[in-house]
Structure formats: structure tokens, C-alpha cells
Length: 387
Image (cartoon, rainbow, N blue to C red):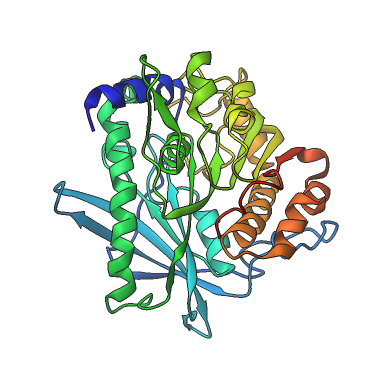
């Protein structure tokens, strides 16, 4: 793909804001199993809260391992963290749907670990990618980390590498399926979903069909048909209206968009009210949903661990806002887990009960005053959403 295409796509989408201030340390060695707690000790729910299966940890235990997968075609190594379900101390029997997760700018494979654990406890294998060049290496050790992040955003190669990382990992799943190991023969590679936060949301959107619209009007898509559904957290959007109108029209798989009322971009131009644009402007080819969390900022999705320098908040009140909103992160995380798990069950497993709960008031009831929820379901004359 010509760099000019990526310059255009980066200029209209990535440069509008894609920061994930999350750089948690990476413990353990590649391919080393590390147990992860699930069950009551993993999430304590107040007695006053409604008990909803999608919001609670699932029936499986969870383990994880780290690996560094090498792509010889690009001479590039992609670190991953894989969360998988267990039953009676052994890997759960398959076939198990797979979900990929792409971190934001400056993040790591440790980002959104709460999602990896939760989804795996419900029977999903979750592969969290780390994208070299747009991970924590961008800011770590830099005298001016914010400046380094802003400079990285302008590098079109980063978006190009990320999309190639996704294709490589999708190919690499075939090897994970056949190689000796805990997941041998257990993956359902016909039921793959993808999620991402911020820059990772952009990576996800490109992988599922967001088009770059050239000045000539020609549209270029990098959609990968192996991805059947997507959960998109804090998507950056093109700034030019003409680009926006066409960018999302051909996304043909179910998508669940999530943002917050305080979800301004820490380093770019995407405004909080613009995060809903992909939901509004997608074509009516598949079901789509949108939740906007009241008081939610840009960092509620990734799982905060520590900030970079003084850049701890995304609102006008900075550090104070960060500290206050941390107290509510657990509330948002429970809702994010519930909505996304029901979505995966509905569109990766074809579970009609989950789809009914999501689309017909169950999630809205659980959400309550914590946000607003919208849906646009495919027209009856449209073909059914892919499983």
C-alpha cells in the first residue's frame, strides 16, 4: 500500500487524538503461564446492584500467557498477551471464539486487562496486541513525553504497521490452533471479534472497513473479512465533513461504540461530541449500538495504571478530575464488561437471548443514569449479520 494512502488516512483519522496513558509494566517471560483471578475475588459487586450474568465474572477460570510472535515477512516481532478460559484447572474445551484487542498510543499488551479477564471468564480467548513503535516506547525515557506522543501521531508508518500487525496476528492464530499448547484445537476461527481503544479504535475501524477517501473520490478499504464483530472504544474521527460522510458507509459487521461525555482527545482534535460520528454515519448494513457514559473521560476504557508526567486528566481540571473519576472507574468497567459481553454473545455466538437483552432494554436498565444508550438495527430486508 502506498505511503500516500496512509498519510491521508492518518491525517483524517489518527491525528485527531489517540492517546492511551496506560504503560503498565510487563511482568513474566514470553510463553510463561500466569494465573489470573476470576470469580468473586475478581469483582465485588455491591448488594444493591442488579445481578446480571454479563456484568459478573463468567463460569470459567482464567489464565494468561505472554508471547512474542515474530513476523519474518516484515522482520517485526509483535508482543501479545493471551487470556483464555479454564475449567477445573485445565484449558476449557473448544471451540472458543477469539477477540483481538488493540491498545492506544503509548500503551502495551497489558492495557484493558480487566476486559481480557472478563471476556475470558465468559469463554473467549482474548489476544491483546502490542504495537511496536506506537507503544510505550514512544514516551518512556523521553524528557518531553507529550511532545514525543504528538510527533508519533504524525508518523503515517505507525498506522500502516498496526494494520499489518492485525493481519499477521489473525494469520498467527492458525499456528496457535495447531501447535502444541493450552489452546491447541480449541479456537473457533470462524468467530473472531476485535476491539480497541483510541488509536486502537482507529486500528479496529480500519480492520473492519473504515475507508480512506482520496481527493479523487476513490475509496480504499483494508477490511479483513475474518473479523465478524467489533467493540470500538473512543474512536477518533476525520475532521473534514466530506471524509466523514463516506468513511464508515461500508462497514458491514455489527459494531458497539462506546465513549463518554468528557471524552475529549488528550493530544488531538477529536472533540467529545464527535466520538459518536462513526455510529451516526455508518451504513445500515449491520446492527450497531452506542453508549455514552455520563462523566466518562478518555481513560475509563483502557484501565488506568499510571500517567505520564503531569498529563493525568483529560478535562480542564486536570489531576483533580483524574482522581475523582478514578473512583467511578469500577462502575464504568462493570457496564463496559456487561454491554460488550452481551454483544459478543449475540454476534459471535449467535445468542438471541443476549441480543434481546442488549437491544430490548436489559442493558438500558442496567445503565440507568450512568449514561445514554442508542441502537440502529439493520433493516428487515437486509441480510442477517454474520455470525
